[in-house]
Image (cartoon, rainbow, N blue to C red):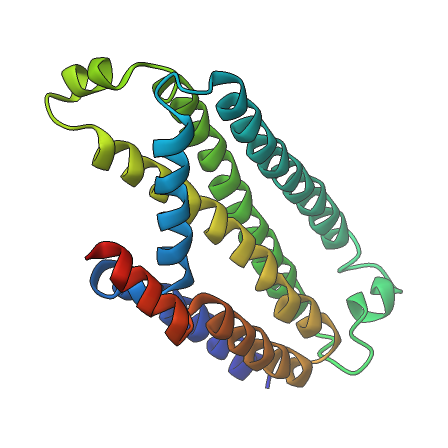
Length: 224
């Protein structure tokens, strides 16, 4: 049953990621991310391009602080997961690494911990990439728009908007790494708990990521 849970986890994660990527390319208005991007664009127009330098920097600083905290937490949890590997061949093995009802096979337990480390590393990468993009945006948004247009050799509004979108996607993917840690932690207890957790997490994420009918109408009217 462990390998069934393992296969289901990867199938779910990959399918969900491909679903979001496809929706983002073809039906962005159906995603809550589309509404959030509309708010970002409005914020850029209202406060950037030397209009309100202090507010821009303070807002970006706050988002960097949250991403830095989450990235640092990922590193701490990775170190803790590596520490668990040291118990695999000990007599107590931390009560089979918490899995009182689960597998006691050291190879299976190693895979469980390895997946936790891999997921945390994925989150760490996305959060640090987000920090990189936001630092870049901090320089851009404090320049006059005509200078940015000259550098880009075109209207820079779409360029800045897409950069903000890519940064937001990185933060979002980092958070989803944390969300999908819940099934992995449940796997330490029992593969059935993992399967239940996968269903619950995906249901919540789908409800959260898909915009409501009212959101879609407001986005469509805003585009017209």
